[in-house]
Length: 410
Image (cartoon, rainbow, N blue to C red; front, side):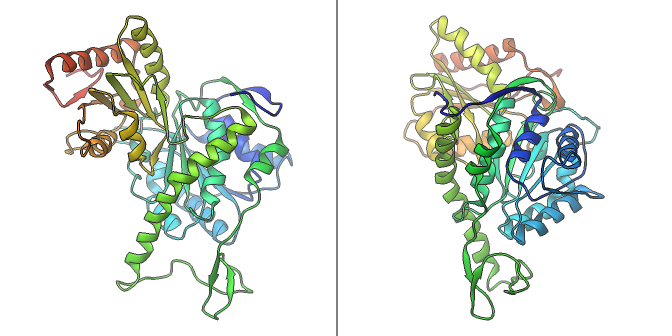
């Protein structure tokens, strides 16, 4: 797709691309605490503040829990808020993730995905964000640095849409993307500012019977999330589920609108399919691994193998209909998980993809590969081995081992 606006090419690593996107998105408040491999994001943004390049209030808090609390407080007063974290930092935020989504605060947070301790490991896997998959946050996983930049900008439009009003996580693989330099096409400041626009508010009736914007305002008193006992709590949670369903429509819409100005789109915004239309065997994965898988698919296609890839760009909300329709012709599917669900007989992505396909008339054989934990490299040769396993399943119509561990010393 050809861009309709002029763009500049900058050499940025993933963290710098995220910070640059946040800088351009007219953010009012950034509250953060540094943690590897995310630190560059907030360091770079603090430089923008110090240099007077943005009019953002930057708050360096004493912990990640406090950072998200500050972003929540800013967001519910009507500010546009952004933060970033990883691994144990995200885990420390755990309580406040639920509070933020429950208050319908459209905070955007970048996560440089990293393993959780113990033992201590600073490298990339998806253990941190998968732990938060039921916290009520939209989750977007990016394949490369360019997509990290584009997705942060889109995230503000998605989160603040009045039919959604949910916080958004943009996940980029730690070190693999966060610290790897790439050419990134960036839009002009005024183009991004126009695209994200100004924050809009839904109107609600407060305790005085007045119709007021849904935000904390001393002139129009209201309250958010103080207490809801059994007679109301259930309804609040049901509303969050409806917001997630609305996001399934808004995310593709934002993806299309962004493509019109940038020339870049990522599948339909929910899933990104690669040679899946006629594929008999396919891999499903998240994040940067998709780039390696695409290279292997190209090689296999030259050899006449009908191989394909389905990259889930959005894991929350889970695009069930898209998964089913995209994989409808596949006979054998391998789901790659860069995290574990201990005792759960497979990883979280495997569980959910298998669930999505369960009720299809002719669902494929599905196998799971746990891979890359703690930042362990996954080679094209190992990806090719997955496709070879799928070809065997295709011939025998039998799965010998449902869950396997890729590149592991056993």
